[in-house]
Image (tube, rainbow, N blue to C red; front, side):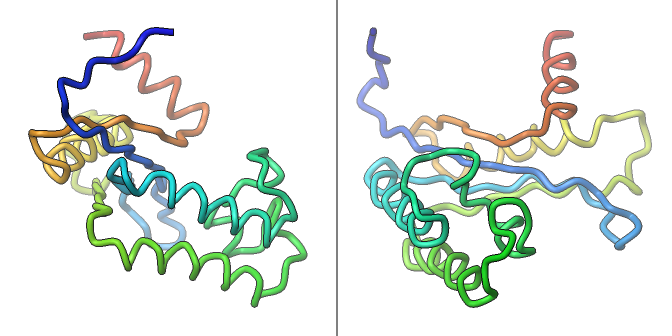
Length: 166
């Protein structure tokens, strides 16, 4: 397998996810948010998440059953169903503490208010575009970023279709 020439630049891993508007609950924003993790903190971050998975789900192996997904843990859904509030709160606070204690982990988001869109603009694509611009600005010109996301099937297909137009 070949190697990628990074021209001596650091490569941040940029993890992101989206939150769709839910007007029924007063959320009119399409949000794309994520973390830009510098290379020397990727290993410690992965170790921490694996430890949380092992403590909460009994395995460090990355599978759907051991996925550390904050929404599911918070609400006690999917693989976190049946876990106590204490177990779930501990898992989330462990991850948040790591982020809070590492100032070099950049926190980036984009929020597009769908009620303010005048033209026929895809809010998912627009939010993602703004997120990428902000993530790029957060890590600086002397680095590269590698995006890893968790878009749902519909959003992913729509964005790929939009990008193919260009």
